[in-house]
Length: 226
Image 1 (cartoon, rainbow, N blue to C red):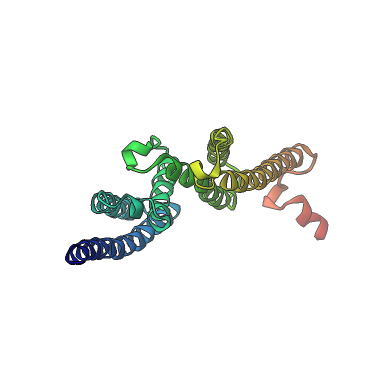
Image 2 (image 1 turned 135 degrees about the horizontal axis):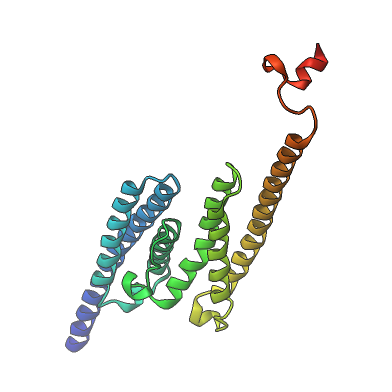
């Protein structure tokens, strides 16, 4: 029984260390998620210096999570840890694509492949947000380019036909991405057609007889009203 007490003490110490690591990881995960959200908000606002600062902070927190949990693989692979790292992957990929920078790899970000892919899937929603912001000011080739990135992402995700236990639910995220892309394609097409229609109307109005200004700077419409 004396040996049992020794065993119990060792187990208790293990549990205490795990609990302390878990509490610290939870706090770090919350801070990491916040930094990632702020970096995405900054890139949409084109506040690039602010974005860089939040991404740097997110990188520090992600590295700390990896370092602090290296002896606790169960905690590192826990849902809250991987969810925060998924946000980290999403933030870095989103900022890179919007700023036309090279795509970061899972190794560069220090995240697991399923975490990277799930973050990549959520990038589709952020690219849609960027495209809609652009279309508010009219059609542009940038919107078309971002839609191309969305298609590229989906074409990769749809090939990851593995069990959810391996991909951590990627199939559902892929279905969501497809729906977002279809809606966005419709928005871009509608904007492009509107742009063509407006251009055609302008060209037609310039070709109509009497459409130019009258002597004295008066317009034909103005002369009719008189």
